[in-house]
Image (cartoon, rainbow, N blue to C red):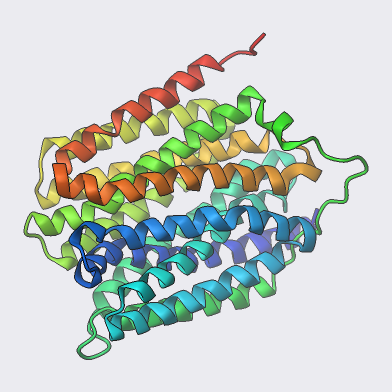
Length: 389
């Protein structure tokens, strides 16, 4: 454990790095489906770059967990930042060369950075005493408020930065942000990897805990639905005659809404408990789907995405806090990596389906499909509300 002063300095660095990494993710979410539609050989492949972004997240979580356990968090974060730099550079080149394959490679590497950045929340929790873990975790998520503002403004202000190649300049700026993030994290003071006196429990033992099962299932579903709806929304807005700047605005404020509740979600978890906060996130996500069903104008899309962001924050923060209570110090890297791998693998499935569902059946069906997974997550939380005999 670092000293309290060093811990605060590290949390500040993690929060800023989270904002910068999140800005790149915002750029990808706001533009990838539209660029995919322009670059792909088949319009049905429009959301494939976003799906590959999620694949990058899912595929890198377990290796990142191994590197963290073996070499520490700094090594993992340097590698993650490096992939973010490459993502921006390759993305800009792909746009300039009109290469769909290169663009998919760029989003794959962007997903690697995004997966590493999401582990910042767990790194923050390791830098403070146990009674301050929930607050430290959500303080890092606050950095995401600025990621939405940065990413949205980047798209709007740099879309024409490179003549004749719209959005190429945006991806170049995102590479610069990843470089700054790398510099910040290089100076952070992370705890050394825990050296176990006895071997940690096998993952299958940890995974059988009712609390872990509840956390993983509810966290995966809340992330799945956020991505499923948010990936489809910009393309749906274009299909309804709206402009790129309107889609940018909606996604920008969606990302802000994803992280703004972090100012109070740590307090809510401490006060109400992680399970109740997770349930609230699921219910609010259902409300977002209802708003999406109510109308297909700019205002309805924007409000639906705003509410969706709030639901994700509460659900994901609550589920993450549940995970913290399921492992011992020597098990944390592998357990957290397993949790994120399952979550991102589930999200990847949803993102692969979202484009096809939207193009084949429309936005209304996309919204209706949110309700069965929500019912499943609530049922699991109810089933494991007390010890299972």
